[in-house]
Image (cartoon, rainbow, N blue to C red; front, side):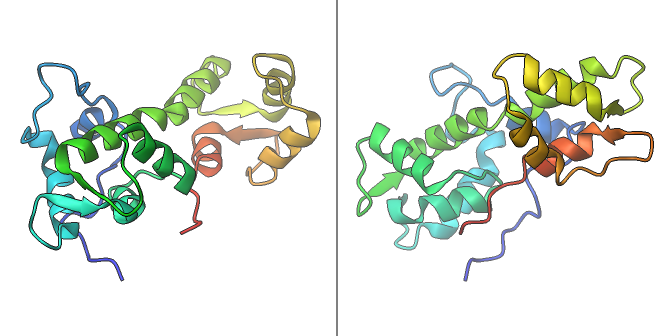
Amino acid sequence: PFPSLPFPSLFPPPKSSTSKILHHPPSPKSSSFKLLHPQNLPFKECFSLYDKKQKGKIQSSELLLVMRSLGVSPTPGEVQRHLQLHRIDRSSELDFSTFLTIMYRQMRQEEPEREILRALAMLDRPGRGHIAVSELRAKLTRLGEKLSEEEVDDLLKEAKIGPNGTIKYEEFVQQICLPSVDY
């Protein structure tokens, strides 16, 4: 069982200042990166909950759980790569500084949702919040990393297509970017 956290969610709607902080974290190499910086407090609080021996370290085997309880959704493979990058094996411990570096790297990695929203917003010239499914299909199969018709069909299975053949793209992006539930 995982403990209840002292904060409900670290990822409120995009217009809040908290979201700006979390989606634009300082680089661990920048001068503004400080372990006790106020924006790192939620990370420190959660880290402390898993620091069972009160040594300033957590078990690397718990990293996936700690990260997910903070609202990011790495796969087990991504967690393993983060640990390998820091030369930490699954039976070792990691300190808060390493944990914070891993968290920020993972958060930057999960930014595609915003990029997808920006790209779809460009198709929505009037800014109404919805786009034609036919236009979305055309762009997905002809531009960038082209998807097959079958791949587009799979993506659109979960979409709520309106009677006029449009989808609300914010809902659609949230749906296709839902964190995996393989834990």
